Length: 359
Image (cartoon, rainbow, N blue to C red):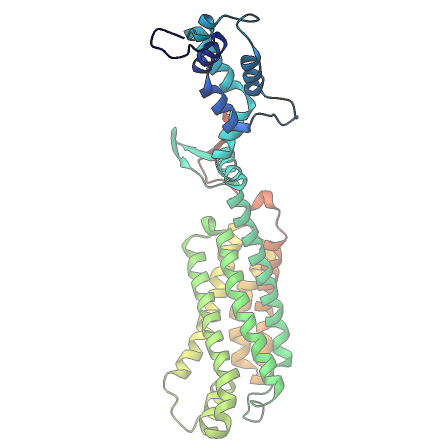
């Protein structure tokens, strides 16, 4: 009992309190937060081992109560922090804080595959990811496949097309043939766009004019065929005179009623296909990227079809479109079968440098 009348604390209790105050609890808390007190292999971690040794020690075995209450030296604190930073548990925690695995993978790909174009001694902004280039070349390649299908359909449709009479409008053959024609126009628009995109830098304004004219021909044909496939069968019973006049525009028969601007629209399709085939074929032939024979056949098909249509009757004039279809299918095959190494070319006068090569 002390002088104040209370019981004195035993020496062992005072020693335990002193050791508790001097124990580095922050180290134990950080280790427990990073990976608990046990490692992945099942053995006790540094924090649990340190806590066990510290608590089990007595003043007589290890150090005295005064030494236990003494603060750690600065060198000891720095060594402890350095050892904590190098431990695997905080590294795993930091990796988890970077985000999900797919986000980390995307960041690594963007950093690894980032390219820069150096032109005239000055570095321009980084190019797109190389995977985007591969995807773009694949899209152009499949556009060639679309052009090939469009050309094949363009050839197949001509011999099986029914006669342009009001009796054929309500038949199943009429519906099937015009549905194939609509598919041909859609595939042709995609295919011609891919052919132009592949050689855009070399065909110049001549290729651009041919591409626009040929695309306009496909658009006009698409709208005209849609009207023949879905509007004419409905009006065949309600307005037969209008349907006969509408079909007479194609077959060359005079109409009893006024059709407004429809005859001019149909003639514009012929002008577009003539200019489109001629200009686009010549531009492709001069570019020299795709097959020259296919480009020459397409350029010849436009004027040849105009001459044949003006000479032969309407029943045989359809076969004048066969060279155009063959040229388009041949160009599509040339684009589709092209190697990927030749599909992606750097801009003239530029040097492509990657991060890996710079390293």
